[in-house]
Image (cartoon, rainbow, N blue to C red; front, side, top):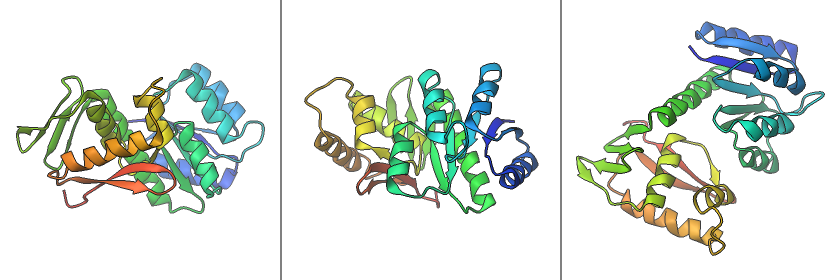
Length: 226
């Protein structure tokens, strides 16, 4: 079972979250600030980091930045009272995987932890099946009802990224940085054009929908009936 690093300076909340995660079978290491957590990361490996933002010594933003400076893979979830748009934008710019605001339902938190860990497994296997769509990252192939869909390499990579992270909002700038690299001709409008093409090509797919998150970017929402 997954090994989780829990970072929360509110001792009561820290204990509550720890108990619930342990009841789900996870292994949990609890810390009370970012500096303590950094020391834990130096000598231990974790499958997920669950952290507050407003903490003494080292806040969650700085903590996430330090992690991402050397580790792009370990998923990070922010759990915080900061529910403003700028904080969320900064969090996703730092490449966190999810953001839940306090007060939250502990069962929802556990569901989000499970969802992020599931997405991580998809990234590791590099294969996914959603509804009637099957994608294989290594082969760069996509099939709907056993009929191949024709994607460009960039279209395929963007769609695989979105589908691997359902409900996660990717900003236009994030998508540009990852999929257009140093192409100086690419703009936010370029991203919009690609998303329109993906919507058109995946219109026959039954398992998901690509949504525009106004003021931020794009995300995929899964069809719960699938």
